Length: 502
Image (tube, rainbow, N blue to C red; front, side, top):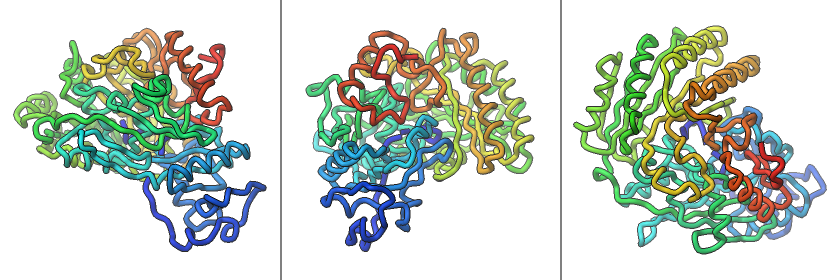
């Protein structure tokens, strides 16, 4: 889910103190190293003594996170280019931040780096042909507002506080994928700053190889600072049926059985189901939350919700504009998961089916874990079940996204806590259950399949990017061409050499 997850490492929104703009870096905040920023951008770079440094460099998750001793906040594309030229020539590690939700522990290889905060690239503009131009600082909340208010739509993640670009680069799952495919499937073009500051465009007409790789493995090749997306006429006039229900833990089998039946033979392409298994903050007993969204008449949405509400403890339902859906659908988990700076350690796996036996074992184990470790009571098991038809409508080689026939359910084990004394046990618990659900007789797939935006750091890269040799060859060739020095290796790095694929 987007709220769990996605770069999810990508790029963010802009506030800048006027006094800081007026005074060059070197005079205000003394250097911590021997580097000297070019004069053209020196007033956009700050050291760790800058009063806003912590605020501007804090990311969504602080688990196994990158660290920074400088921040660069480019104001223009030219500034970004100059900054990258400087950083790459000086051998200074760097990481771009847009939404800042990328939580993979692979990012921990980036230490004592310069953060390139892309908050000045926070814009969303509808074009006359109903395409939309987006800067890498924009989040889904503003993206949806602009598109929805124009009477259009496209696939977005469930969490409004996730960055648009980071989600797209890993594929971009979401509620409309059954109708329109992934967020990345709607991408028309992208503008990219390469490691040496070179600015290139990628589309179906120019740099087609890069355009292919950006959609599914896009964190590997440069900083995507702008993209143009296709949009579609709003379904049902932009109104969505949304229902949230809660259940006691003894109703788990009923919830899973209903959801799995809806997957047979294939989920209605317009239907979206999200299941969260959380804990009651007072009793620490497991609570099951289900959200059903249907972009159609209320009566049709109710037909699906009633399959669950017949045995739910509570139920709310409403017709709401798509522009408001992110605020009202499963809010305790989605909006509740937006604050930055907490520990989020997440493992996930894709499954073809949902099996009651395995979920019962996982939930019982979860209940015991939370009672033993109450400071981790914000942890959840999350399941996203979205339509498949729109994804399958594209050929397998349409983009670098490899899972067009293996994207039924995303099962996420999200461990959240503030007390680091539980970190080791939380990691072991989530890893154990990710591995359990990845077994072929549980997942329904012959090999481990992982959505790249939701990946951890221990999976074989083929599980993220596809097992086919032609995919490895194509991605490695792109890596050698566009990132020859491996400066974009922080997020599930594609190997430059075929022999290094796992």
